[in-house]
Picture 1 (cartoon, rainbow, N blue to C red):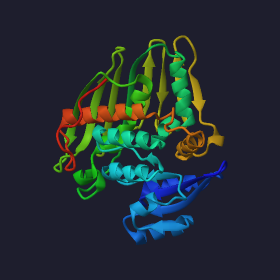
Picture 2: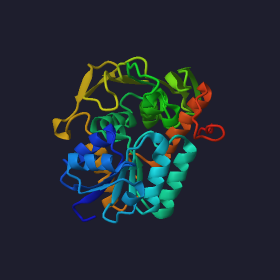
Picture 3: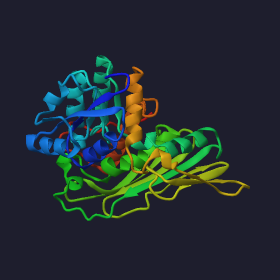
Length: 340
């Protein structure tokens, strides 16, 4: 790493890896130097697509590459613990896709590894780095709508997804909750912290993954969070934050919004829109910029996506899965139930 350039490695070659890399190579102070896959052919194809100098058919080779500062882990989430752990142990900083891991036990293991090795680690929760979401959080934190009473958020895809699809595959941590529900849960906890109790219901597939899940999160403040996710119905992906003195609505795409509307008692509605200078609303550049800022500053975690917050979200996801009866083949014992 130089004062100007942070060197990246990409671990995995799927759709999300391609989307992130496309945003990354547009940043003048980022350099993608290598990509790895379990398949040499897949790594080579990806490298040729993006003009990446080195392609590895082995994760360890990428982790050991001394020219890499940060590795972006974009494997299926069942492999996050292994892939990110390999990179941290080898001395790389890591940005790991969401959900951070399969469960909180694995997440805690990664956090311990990062702290033992003094490496930067962050979940790729790009929503937390989005400028408009940060503006919304600042308004809520400033008390613009008073005390928060409730948060509602949903994320659903219409499908239909066949049983062979990764979203239906228990071996890959399939189901709506980990893939989509992590967004509404993370949104609620961004504004309210960790819930003290969780109630949940789900419709399960024949394979044993959740086709749709609804949960109510209870907070010590008296606030409630209502979250829903689905892989059998396309939802509005909307969110609403209601306070004692007003409300903020995100009509669509709450995790990468182009606008939100502030309603305050006795005042006209006020609309806040995304700044075109911030780039396309679906850009992941902001999380990359935050990683590079933190790494240059010698920080080992981001204040925007703190590790304690990531662990809190994982505890909530584990609690929801326990309530609805979803278990994965690679797990041993019961999902974590302890909430703050």
